[in-house]
Image 1: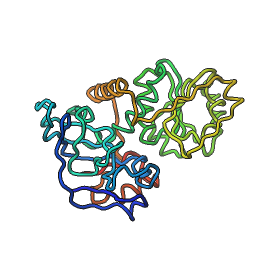
Image 2 (image 1 turned 60 degrees about the vertical axis):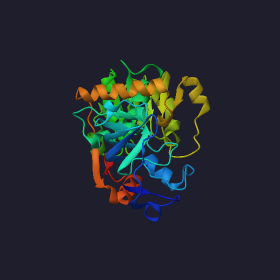
Image 3 (image 1 turned 45 degrees about the vertical axis):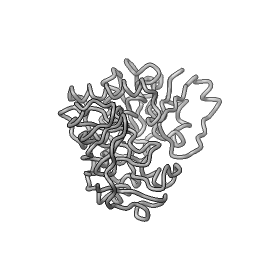
Image 4 (image 1 turned 90 degrees about the horizontal axis):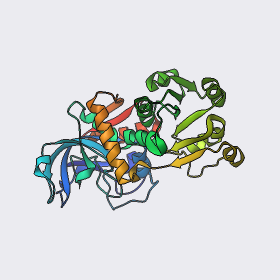
Length: 322
């Protein structure tokens, strides 16, 4: 099969290789998926760059993808053969991800893809869409609440703005860096954090109360804002940070009573994972989710794809055709 891989950490141009590798065989409880697409996420370039140790001497990157089940291992219903699927955790704690012609992985990690959803969209679900859902669902949900989505033009943020409305939020605010990103995010209100005082604008938009929940992409950059923008006993659902160490202002935070919920989409509890996958599929079957595909490239151009995601040069998800 055609595949992309790296055998050491480093810059994309220095370590990524495209070539031929043996097609895997599904083991017991596994399915073999002929991949149509592979999603490129920030965690993919960070892992390739060395943010996590190499899990094997050779790594095929990417956790997200979509395709068709071509074979199944022992213990898997043969009726799954021919099923269109989307994939989560393709390369999490295992060496062979979705940047390839095929992937063999446990059957539950290949989720039925609704008929009306493209393979390109399917490659955006495992990390961006499930992260957005979990950030809004955990600790009671957002029905009737005011939500601030940090970075609403990003892959997770774009889904989170939509899902907050679908989950019953009464007001969705986001922070952006440009007018184009504000339009892309589609929130009720967009705060231009480079030219506006975010805390002041949040107070204006919420009548001085603050938001019930923040969906946070970079706690290191925005942690000092939390006690200024979250209502008394509100919550920040944090899925990312631009730095390994985070500082929070203890006095203002303890007075606010605000909670910070940390989570990583790779390690969702089994029940939450099932619930999230089912909810995403239900929304897609109802035509309620918009998928922002910013660029599609062939697998041979994986270096350019990694560099584009690393540079933040594309508005929307970057997807490879396998």
